[in-house]
Image (cartoon, rainbow, N blue to C red; front, side, top):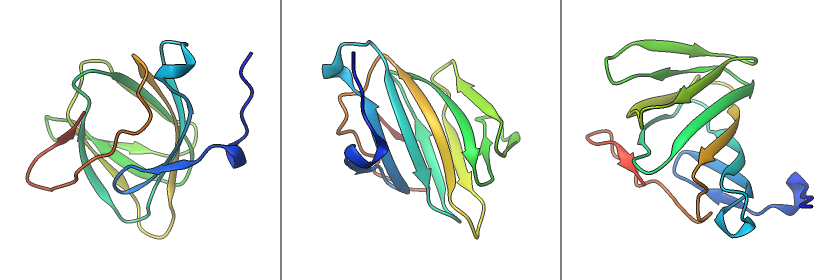
Length: 124
């Protein structure tokens, strides 16, 4: 059994926020579970070429913009899943951080970070 508390998990500065990675590849579960903060007022062009991701918003507001330019609002109680390794923009509304619980499959190593540049999607 694995037991971890948020206060015990070192955050990873992933680019436009912090990610507490509760489960990583070395834990042997086959997936990663994170508590991720996206800093207020930021926009992150992201793509996961080797991982599928599902995110559940627990606080704050924002949007995820798909590769076709469609904007999907995020608020507490909203889930989105990147089931096609979808490139996307993750946007946190100004004034309040966006907080997401995320699952990655397969698991992340745990040290991944994004190199953010509005001209291209950051991927790992």
